[in-house]
Image (cartoon, rainbow, N blue to C red):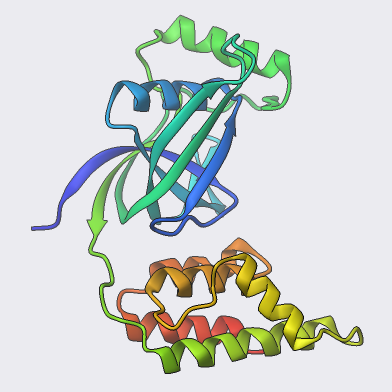
Length: 236
């Protein structure tokens, strides 16, 4: 039977892959509550790409497939509780089975970047009761890891496709192939023993938009993953 759990959900304009590091600056009251709750618990929350075609009580909605983020470090930047800096690392992938909405809808005039917006949200939260959750939660089903090997031949072909895509996209500017080797070296992608993490990282280098990476995250097996990466790296 699939393993399920309740997770706080943080919709973001990015895709987090397993074992990928993700630093975040937290300033909204609802996400400071999320981090506080995580630090009192197992330190885990779900990162999902924003679903621009949906909303939950007026708040930004998440895509249904995401990755668990584990908090490895949390700092109060100004020592006043106004801004937190956290470092996280991706864990398991998951699928959302059921959304648990926040305790109140997003106000129509809410500005997440203003002091007034933060004050209004905090006042609404106090009236409802501070035990109420301001953030989205979800019942999620953990997705098994893809544990197949990546052959060196497959990896080298993907790298060649990535180089060709970068060279073609740069035209009429000329990109020297050796300069792309420096990019691979910078991101520790020079290897003769590739793993799925290398494939994830190369995909991130080849994407212009996080929505191009969501199908990569959603791949269910190695063959499916490699095919989706090939589609991403194909010059259109």
